[in-house]
Length: 547
Image 1 (cartoon, rainbow, N blue to C red):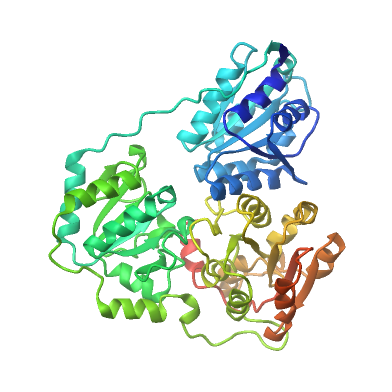
Image 2: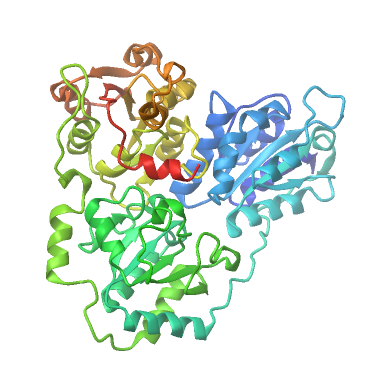
């Protein structure tokens, strides 16, 4: 039996383990997308390629497996580039299946490989019927085992060629894992034996199977406190020694304890400017260690005392085996445990509410929502001045409860992130936290939420402005007309698409949220929260330092 290259490529992707594909279908990717569906993949249609790319990124992050994005040649790919950039910077295992114009005179012709390379994705191309299946297997292998975003170009002229239909699953290349160096394991074990105030900071590389158990067991042995980077938030949820997030989002107590550490170990964590507050969060004389399965990642963001090449789970287990007796309890004293229980959460930090009769303080809003919404949730957060409030005042159950697409710091990805996360974690309540700017940028995907029947809560922190710029430039006396806007009735917009919706100006306005939670949730809910915008969020100054 023979088939076209487009049909074979679609079937082969599914045979390699890609079971979910997001996209917008045009003439160039029609056949290959239908072939994936015919082979058993789920296709999720977005309203814009930018939304589709971010949905695929979020799905891969929250499911723990690869995802695919399918786009039309030329403009379909360029529409998706911001989401692809975010995925590439985040090392998301994603295959972008991009139709490609074969003629340089086509209106759709652009240098798609150059576009992919420019944003950090890996460009590949199916050049003939003879190499089509090998290219698919290589693309999936690179995405999954290299944790890379791959743009697999599929030229129109090649799509219609014939080749034998693939039979069953294709073998996907699996690279050899890095071998642990015993001397590095022993040096880390020695550092842990000598430390009196150790802190572990776990990142994206610690979200894999068995990593939490290996790290908590080692931390208990050496008396280390536990923290995460923002993208791994929730990894240590429920542990009495967890400080939650390290870096710009850290609570005052978390920052104090991390700053007091004499040893900081980043486990699958880049220890970048976000996670270390541009290095100021770590003591000048602290021993700093980074563990990563990519040797090229060691020491990229800061000087290290020791770099260890190895995956998190295996390395932690090896260090535990080499540790021996630890002479002191480390940071795990009764006083520290009591402090963590009383005041490590941001919601336990006292504050004077801002706002007034027509504007609700974003902290008051988020604490109330944290109490009203079910604990089994997956939270996706857009970018903006507001983002610290949902990121740190909404609790999450584990590392698959927080979807943080902020490697590129683009506004407008939050709603699509929530859709992808919701599909990856269907047993949880999806919560999208957006600013008004990001909500309007991504508004096309409100229809996608309704069409897919997702029981989602969309919370819009609506200050009628790009608040980050207001608070960054306003104190200098700069004119702000370019970043302030008339108030928008986002609740009315959402109702027109099929949401239930309410406008919130005071805490009592949130009462309908409890009714929605208790009800059948047959329609998603949008909360248009008119938030006080008269002060910057605490993390904003640090964020602007890195621009």
